[in-house]
Every structure is written in C-alpha cells, then in structure tokens.
Length: 484
Image (cartoon, rainbow, N blue to C red; front, top):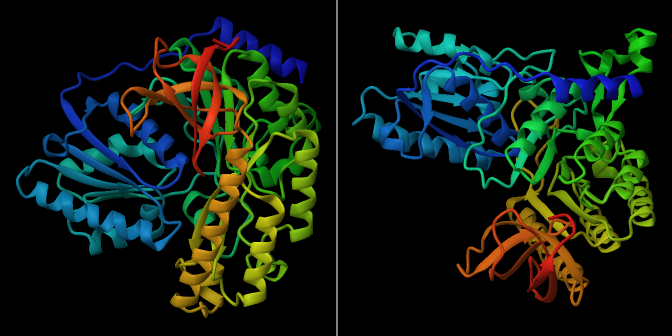
C-alpha cells in the first residue's frame, strides 16, 4: 500500500501528462447527454477525443457539423426522449445538409445496427467502450458509409484521456473510477450495455484529480456503476482477481483505500462518490468517511424494494434485514449521514404486502432524497425474458404516488433537522429562483440558498439555516469556512 502511494506521489509531482498534438479546430460538435452522471462524464471524454480531431463544442444545434446524443436505456421513457430528439435533429439536418448525426451510449449498445434501420437520420452508432474509435468511424461516415462500433471492452478504456468539462460550473467535476457492472439485477440493462466491472489505475485517477485541482475545481465526485466494487490489482476484470498473482493481490487497492488516498492527497478538495451497492458497501468506507472532513457525509444507497420476495426476484444480493443492519451501522459510525434511495414499484409479481414492506422500510430509514420509478420492462434483461409484467399501470401509478408522497414527508423531516445549524456550503452558482441568491450544497448534499453579499462562486461559506422546504434549505452567510 505504501509503495503504491509512493508511486502515485512521484507520478503526480514529477510527471506531466502528455497532450496529443491537435488538429486545427474548424468543425463544430453539438453533444447532448441523457441518463446518469456516468453518461455526462463519458460525453466529456468524447469531447476530448474529438477536440484532437478538430472539433470545438457548440451549444447551437443549427451550426453543428456533428451532432451526438449520449443515450440511456435504463428506462423506456429515456429511450422515448431520445427518439423525439432525433426528430428534432432531422428537421435541422434538412436545412444543414452537411450535418452528421451519431448515437452514443447504452441505447446504441443495446440496439446496435438496428438503430440505423429504425432511425434513417443516424449516421453512426457507438457503444460506451468504443469512443476512441470515433475518428475512424467519422472517416467512414464522411466517405458515405454507415459506421457502427459496439464492442464491449475487458479493460478500463479511458484512463489516459483528460475529459473536456462540458457546461461546467468551474467548481465541481466528475471523475470516473470504474466501468461496467457484474451484479446482473434482473430488471437492469446496464451489464449488457456497459459490460463487466473493471477498475481504473489509481495513478491515473489521482492525476486527473490533480489536473482539476490545478484548474481550481473545489469538489470531485468519484463515479462508477458500482463504486464500492473498485479494485485495482494491475488491470483486468474484477472477476479475475482470484487468478491474479500473489504480488498483485497483496498490492491491490480497494475503494476504501482509494477514497482515503484522494482525501489525504487533496485535503482542500471536497469529495463525493456515486453509486453504491448495498451488497458491496464496506464499513471500511464508512470509517474512511468519518476520518476525513473533506469527504461528504452522503451516500446514495439504492435498495429498489423493501420486500425480500421482490429483492430475490430482482436478484439483489442482500435481504431487507441486511440492508437495515447496514443502515444502522452507517448511522452508528456517522450519525449525521444523509442517505438517498432508488426505488422501483410494480416489479413483476409485486403484491400489496410487498408494497407495504417498501413503505415500512422507508419509514425505518427516512431517506433524505429519493429517485422513484414505476417498473418498465427492458428488452434483453432476465425479467424481460422470463418474468411477467403483471402489475397493472393503474396500480403502479397509485403505488408510485404513495412512495413519492412518503419520501417528500421524510425529506421535509430531514431538512427540518438542519434548522438553526451553521453549515459549510460550497457555492456552485446562482439560485434559479432569485438572481440575488447563491446556491450550494452542504456535506449531506442538500441544496442551500442564501443572499450573495460579497461572496463569490467557488467559496466555502458558513451558512446559518433559518428556513426550509422538503428540498431546499434557506439561510444567511455568517462568514467564510476554514476550508476557503
């Protein structure tokens, strides 16, 4: 472990990243992203790759030479949204004849060549692991041929690329640490669209964070489909770790160790991470969070259901009781921890008792935030192939409403706990509702708004909380924090 940290120190301090020679930037790239934060980060990687090919990003669709949409397949609604956007691109393409249109990401991986048949506007289809092949694929397109690359990789593929920060506030940034997922939940398409789990070299992670710190970014979010599964032992799939040499196993770095490295090397930088999986969440991670003030006290901990029957049907590798025990331990180690959830209602075979078990679990935890959805069948998943989507739309709608209403009640309960407290806030931008107010987040990831006064973007400010809604805290600044 010490040898790994020494190597990382030397790498950060003494070796500059080599920037590839760029072509003259004369072309315009318009890129839109849908879905998770990983997709947003992937779009930044794509922009970096195409920057070297002479593309400047633009926010004006009509002037683009190349339009890319980075897609999500996690729910049917996300794919429907992309289809509608392609209709918009088609209208513009009728005027701008030189424009080329590409589909990236999970939807591209799922549909492959079929996308070219269904959407005649599309010129290229590129899966999440094939972005380095974009220059070659574009050559194919400009020579009049359709281009498709949806090959899933067994390695982390983008650790050597410094992303272009798109639509950045200049304060917070995402850094991807893992790709793929091995968990095979029956409702989820991610393992089929992003492949098996593989982790990124810690050296490259800390180098990217260093580049962000050098640019005065104040907060970094470590990203992965399942960050708790991070395991670096020299490369390759996580499932092959047991076959690695004894030396590789002895010097391996897990997520708790990586998180400790990040917080230690960059004590003035605030860290978050997402997403966690209950079955892989180690209490070592919680102890590291307790150890470092600059690791935010917030975990997104998806549970999906409060029913053991549904958890088994979903192939979640934890029970209701194991999840509740984990929550108990988290609050025991860090009482001020904020937790958020993902919840699916109306999964195949869900009964009223299963639904009540979910509501009961929510009452037990009282989550700060929630992301709640009615189940929609995804083609290619085990549930889509072998299970019957037998809960009616009306029942799904009613159950979803009950879950959302309860979550809003708990969110207000949690925000009220902050009243009267002085909390550190990182200023991220101007409030959407009031141009004279700043907005930022506290360590629990709750949004706080307060009068601007003399403070500026990127400042760490102590704010006294005076009022709240279920989603937002309101207060006034009482001075700079010691982290400023």
